[in-house]
Image (tube, rainbow over all chains, first blue to last red; front, side, top):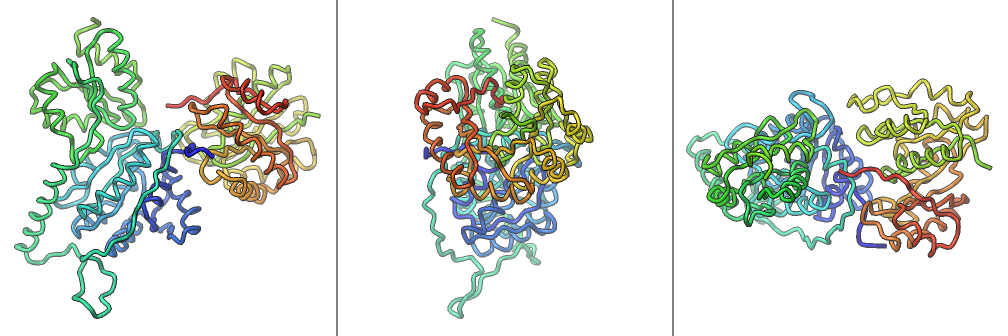
Amino acid sequence: MADKVLMKGNEAIAEAAIKAGCRHYFGYPITPQTEIAAYMAKRMPKIGGVFLQAESEISAINMVYGVAGTGMRVMTSSSSPGVSLKQEGISYIAGADLPALIVNVQRGGPGLGGIQPSQSDYFQATKGGGHGDYHLIVLAPASVQEMADMTILSFELAEKYRVPAMLLADGTMGQMMEPVELPEVDYKPTEKDWTVTGTQMKRKHNIVNSLYLLPEELEKTNIERFERYKAIEENEARYESFMMEDAEYCVVAFGIASRVSKNAVIAARNMGIKVGMIRPITLWPFPKKPLAEAAEKVKGFLSVELSMGQMIEDVKLATECKKPVELCNRVGGMIPTPEQVLEAIKKMAGGEK
Amino acid sequence: MMKRVTIFSGHYGSGKTNLAVNYALMLREMDYKVSIADLDIVNPYFRTKDSEELFAKNDIELISLPFANTSVDLPSLPSAAYGLFDRKDRQVIIDLGGDDRGALALGRFVPRLKEDNDYEMIFTVNFYRPLTTTVEEAYEVFREIEYASKLKFTKIVNNSNLGEETTAEDVIRTVEMTEHLAKLTNTEVMYTAVKESIADDVLKAVGNNKVFRLKLQEKLF
């Protein structure tokens, strides 16, 4: 057989997680990400892994918390309302400095919202989400191949920095089918000095905990954690630059919005408008540097989002509002068309050239 | 002899809906009266109802679930589907949901199907889909669906593809696997479905008349 398979984004996440050595999946079904759970339910028993459908999202994330404390690769997945339910557990995992993967295949909100695609959990994903000072490493795939690749990367980054990672996709990315090549991952679980795996009476026991009754101690752990965040911001910001060399205008879009926008950028170029695109691949850390650099060269930015305008705030911060930043969006499960984005580009560029 | 009812079933994402739509168009070209029933209770995202306009234009009757494409994730069967068994002047195509769970929707209609004994139950397979990449895996899904639907498959359609990237070579290498699966299950291969652009190459290599040209491709995002 060929090396490629035709996969749904959700299936690609599940299989990539298995390739990355994840043998523990805990979840609760919700559209449009249920294929992840369905796939895990089929595959995990065959490879000696655990698939467990918990009685709720809250128990699922706490099971993730438990396994994460042993240092094993573990994940959960859900969609927007379900991810909201998980926030307490995510905050605990962040507070206990544990690596884990949380997948959010976003749907329209707020509330129960709808089952169609959305990017309106951007704030929740990138600004913490739960209570307390913390961040997740947030990756935003824009193809089924990236759904697979970034699942693997999420596990690696989470482990490297002992920070929970989130894969922030949306309903279209989860449901669409594309050919994928699943990479072989050379992963062997390593001994870690912080896991709770039994002391065999040979060492002092480790404690995995997010409770600190002494404020001085809690302050210290927070400050130490932010040192790690600083390192992540310096080393792990990822983005794709498209036709930016001579660009006078810059579209900023991630995930499904970037796929739509790419078509619009090409169409605008054909009309003689010098426009390019910066696609954030990590949403936290946000790729501030390329945007700051672009702010010195371009005349304006266009943030294309499936939300009422959330990432646009980070674009304004990264560019220090040196140039105007416009919004082009659809919400509630609707997706902007390339024509809509093209119109917005044309408007920004002051009409057709 | 062409049977009156054709049921497309198979692994999740094996291309049942696309095949059902193309098959309906072919039957219309042959001047049959055609009804297509969307009984996919599994996937609320892509479904036959997306082709509503196309059906209207080609005078194909579409019977879809009461809540199809409304985002209401409520699996229920269309009442009009029951009538199809009495309207014997029509060819009926049934588009089932994926896997054993999707096949459950057929349960209600099995007694009538068996009584009339004028149906083709088709297993569609795409060997490039995960969990059906080998004959053995496909066999497992095949039996799971039969168990859930309480109906035996009669034919197999090979719909192996890698989406837009599919080459003739990709398809040709799956033809033998399909034959193998048919032998294993005591069924026969109905045809190998291929997109128009590579149909001639596949036909040349396969050398029989069991190639079905897909006029219409599902749109990708």
